[in-house]
Image (cartoon, rainbow, N blue to C red; front, side):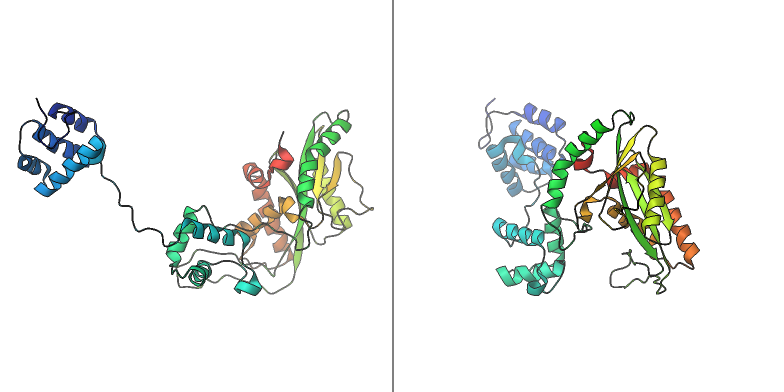
Length: 355
């Protein structure tokens, strides 16, 4: 049977009904069934009644079917308005976000959506809303993330050099300690943090347009958490002490030594604070101390442990007394070591733990 005038001849009514039955698109199935009526000898008016549309719509379906076959009858989402900025201009915005603001030039220390929108208006003469800016930045892969600590006077190459040399250092220590440490080498990180009554305030959920409040003490009693983690094993060792000095560090080394697995040797990485590298320290036999490069806190994941503990358990509090500080610090650390997967998530670093 010849195809109806105006319709392509490589299909017939039975074929279209078969395609409609297999289609997962309701709109496409309806249009295929309507056009199958024409192939079976019906008029375009019959097809319009079957499809529940007017004749002009049937004509549009015929044109789409002739051009692209059954795929031409699939519902397509509207493309929406085109972007007000070109790809090159958005690339310039991305470079600006990556570089961060220059306070003396841009007048801010971090980019807000309104600041970026203002820069785009001044640079390209295009006005964008904060919502549009947020959607576009997210589509480009950007999120608001916590910044890593970075010392203002650090040598930018020192950290990368240390990372590259670390595997060889670890291998040398493993060879040197092979006889006396059959349990292998554990990589540990150590740091200390002050927790006091003059406590921090973190972000919290609140309704837009409001300014949430949080308790903030102005008293000055404090204690120090001496903390160390072994990310590969998901374990930690800590003491809460009144002072940050050599005797406190000596106590912490003893605590780490007791936590190292029997028969293993700990490679302990920490910053170059005076009490960490003092000649008065007696280092336990199962620990080797390796100082991190100067002014490179981003190499020490314990810095991220402190941030996690403050954000979740230690901030937005009023400590009644020194003993209250001790209790909360101990409770927070114990909650951390009860979650070995959290220590692994926070502390594992590819440069320190790759095989």
